[in-house]
Image (cartoon, rainbow, N blue to C red; front, side, top):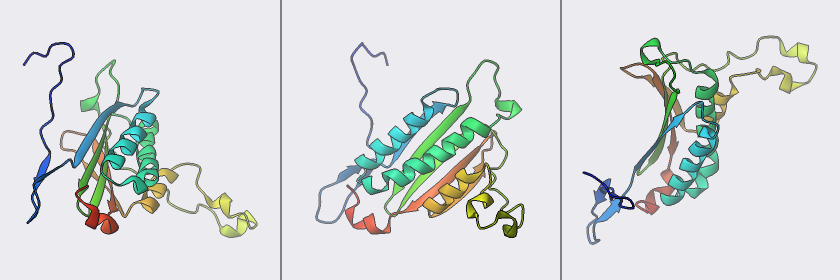
Length: 184
């Protein structure tokens, strides 16, 4: 199909929901974005996707938490991911896929990268609390807090290796209170 300048292709409806006594409704439940780790605005683009998607889906109250979670997950890829040899192409950028999926009771966020190494959380205290002289902030690790932040914001956090190489880190936000407002 050849498109002329200015023409657009209309997207097909993602899901059609029918309720007894109501007309059929079209509900979008999936959005994704491919980012490049070397792009200076990749974190801003990921946060923008979250804001626009959650606002469209009637979940504006979750924007701040989900934006922070996505920022941490994408930031981990930017700063730590090294592509598997099978996925390395000289002169290309590292790809990051950000996916948002909504089901009636959950919001799933997935961030995929080209590094098969599992994500790691800090191991915890490396020295005795008695040595910090009442300064609890001295117990915080210098790095690795991003996954702890995501874990504290989301209702679940896990990762899955991809068959062709790389991995996806997922987090889930429960939408129990929003069920009666869905579909938007």
